[in-house]
Length: 286
Ligand code: ATR
Image 1 (cartoon, helix red, strand yellow):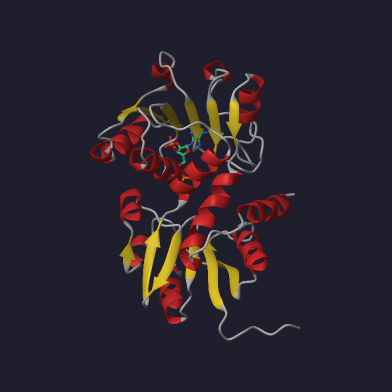
Image 2 (cartoon, protein in one colour):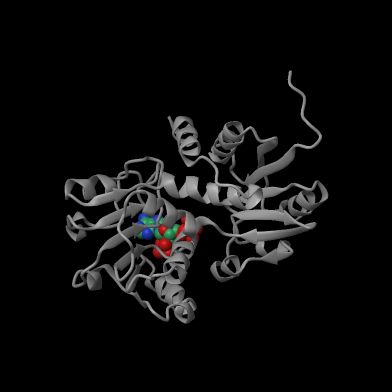
C-alpha cells in the first residue's frame, strides 16, 4: 500500500450529515489530475462538537476546510478572521489556514455566478432577477448579484415567509446602490417583466418535496433563464417545466462544483480542472 507522505497537506469537509457529501470526490479528482500531494476527507462534526473541531483544525494545521450544513453560520465566531463577503453574508463554506490563523470565506454566491456564466447565460448587466427563497443560499447569491459588476438592474426576492424576504432586502439595502432590490409576493410578481428566475428553496429536492415546484409554470416565458440550485435530482420539476416552456435552464450541480473549485483556487493558487471535478461529482451521483 502506498504510504502517506509527511508533507501531504490536509483538507476536509465538516458537517452533519456528511456521508453523501460530493466534496471529497470532487477535490480528490482535482488532486489526481494535477498530481498534487494532498489529502481530502469528510468528517462528521455535531453542533455540540463544532468548537472542539475548529480548535482541532488549528492544532492539526489542517490547510483548508469546507463547511456544510448545519455549521455554515455557527462557525463564524469560532474563526480568527472573516472575508468581507463572509461577514456580510453571515456564512462560511471555506476555511483557509493562513499564518496559523483560520480565515473564513464564502464561495457559494460566486460559485453560482461562475457556473451560470459557464452555462452560456447572457450578462446579468441591466437584467431583472427573481430570487425564490430568503434563506442562507438566497443570501449568498444575492450578495454576489449586488456586488458583482456590472450589476443587474432589479432583484425581486420572493419567499413563502414574506417577512423574511423583507428582512433580507433591508439587511442588504446598503449594498444595493445601483440595484433596485424589492421583496414581493408571487402575486405582485405577476405584473413584472423578468429575465432570470433562481430557485434557492429546497422545493424540488430529493425527498418529500421532489415532485413540487416553487413557482407555477405560468410565470415562465421562453426568454427566461431559469436556475435551480437543487442538484438532487439533476432535473427538478421547475427545470422540466421551464424546458417545456422553451426557457433556458441551469441546474444546481455547477454551483456545487464551482464553490469547491473557488475554495481549491484559494488553497492551491491555481485553477482546478472544472470538467474533472464535474465528472467526478456526476459519477458519484449516479
Ligand atoms: P438554505 O441555507 O439552504 O437557504 P434555509 O436557510 O433553511 O436553507 O432556507 C430555506 C428556504 O427554502 C427558505 O426561503 C424557505 O422558506 P421560509 O423562509 O418561508 O421557510 C424555503 N422553503 C423551504 N420549504 C419550502 C416550501 N415547501 N415552499 C416554499 N418555500 C420553502
